[in-house]
Picture 1 (cartoon, rainbow, N blue to C red):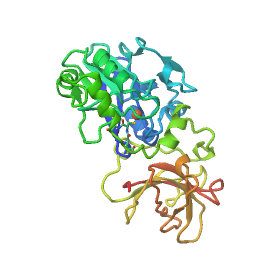
Picture 2: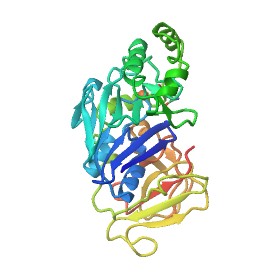
Picture 3: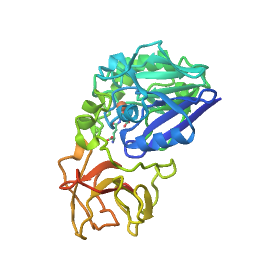
Picture 4: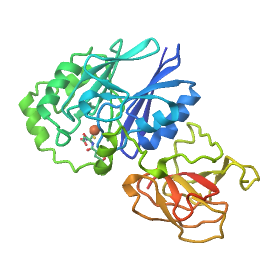
Length: 361
Ligand SMILES: N[C@@H](CCC(=O)N[C@@H](CS)C(=O)NCC(=O)O)C(=O)O
Ligand SMILES: [Fe+2]
C-alpha cells in the first residue's frame, strides 16, 4: 500500500510530501523545509519508515531545504536535478530518471520555467504528480528570477503535465490560499494563466506584469539551497556531544494556539529540575512568540538576557529574553521559527537547554 502525507510549513506556505511503500517501509520526502525537520523525523519514526532520500523539486528561493539536515540525522540521500546547479547532492536527476522506494517509483519530468532546474515527479501509475513551483493550483510559479522563463514554463506545463490523465492528482510545492490538491484535467481547463484557450503569448505577457515582491528569505535561501541546505559552516547548527537525548512526537511538532510549551534537557549527568537528566516537559504561563532551542547556565533570575538565534539569516541580531530563571526559558523574539538558539555568552558551557514550542509571530 502507498503511504502518503501532505505536510505544510506555515512560514513559507510550502508543502512537503511523504511517500512510502508500506510493504518495505521505504520512504521519500519531497521538498522538506529546514525548520520542519523535527516534525518530519517524528512522523517518519512514528510510521516506522526508513527515509531513503529527499528530493528537492528545485532551488527554493523562499525557504532553506531540510535535505542536508535530514541526511545528517537519518542518513537519507539528497536528490535534486542536475540542471539545478546544486553542490553536494548524492544523486543528480535528469528527465526520465526513476526514484524508487520499495515496489513504487516516481519518474522525473523536466519542467523548467520557474527555475531552469525545476522538475516534477510523477507516481508510477500516474495517479499523482508533484509539480513543485511549476504548476500551482489555478496558478503557476513566478518566472522573474533564478533564470525563470515564462515560455519554457508554458511548454513544460502543456507537454509534461497537461498530458497526464485527467484524473491524475496534482500536488504543488506551495499554495498561498489554503488549497491542497488539484487534477490535470481541471488545470488544463480552468488554470487562469495557461489553461483553456490561453496561448504562450498570453502567458508570457501575464507573467511579465506580475510584479511580485521578492521572497523575504531569498538572500539566505538561494545560497544555502545551492549547497543542499548545508549548515556545516555554522557552528551553532552542529550537535554538541553530551546532551541528554530528547525525543519529539509528531503532535508536539505542530504548535497551535497561543499557549507556550517547553521541553528541557540537560547535559548528561546534570540534574534537571526533577533531579533527572534529559527530557522534561512543562507548560508555560505566558505564550511565547517564537520557538527554538535556548541554552543557559544555572544562573540567578535576570531580565532581558540577550539571546542569539542560530539561523544564518538572523545570526547578527540579538533577541531579547523577557524573563530568565533556572526553570523557565526566556521568550525569544525571532521572525524565523523554530530555530536553534544559544544563549550567547554561555552557550558552550550551558548545562541545560530548552526547546520552545509556541506560536509564531
Ligand atoms: N511572500 C512570499 C513570496 C513567495 C514567492 O515568491 N514564491 C514563489 C515560489 S518560490 C512563487 O512562485 N510564488 C507565486 C505567487 O506568489 O503567485 C515570500 O516572501 O516567501
Ligand atoms: Fe520556488
